Every structure is written in structure tokens, then in C-alpha cells.
Length: 93
Image (cartoon, rainbow, N blue to C red):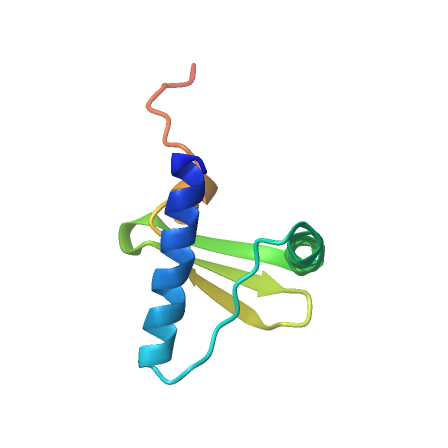
């Protein structure tokens, strides 16, 4: 088993344990067919996004979907990936 596989297993177990403390059950899958289904559903969900608010300073991204609903994602890296890079280049006036 690779080191990366071990880390994924540890991360999923930790998340399920944390959710259990909140009295909420979680499911975990790493099986190829189930993972392919989850990815397909996630692609559909992402395709419904019509606006994004990325706030790297607080580690949050908000996705606005075509039906007006919002999905809030707390992530240490997603908001940075979504934010437009700052440029200090001066254009010719």
C-alpha cells in the first residue's frame, strides 16, 4: 500500500469519526464504480454553477447554482485556486 493510499484512508476515517461525534453518519467510498458515480454527480453539480465567490482570507468558496441555491465550501486551498492572481504590472497609459 502506498503512502498516499495510507493518508487517504486515515483522512476518510478521521472525517467519519468527526461526523459521528456530531451524531451525523457519513459514508466512505474508494471503490472504482462508486467513485466514478460520485465524480459524475459532482461534475453535474459543478456544471450548474453560475457564479463563484472566493474568499481566500477565510478559506471559503461560495458556489451559486442556476436554481439560486448556494453551496459553501470551507477549504484551505480551493479559494486560492479560484481567486484571480494579482498583477502589479502597469499598463501603458
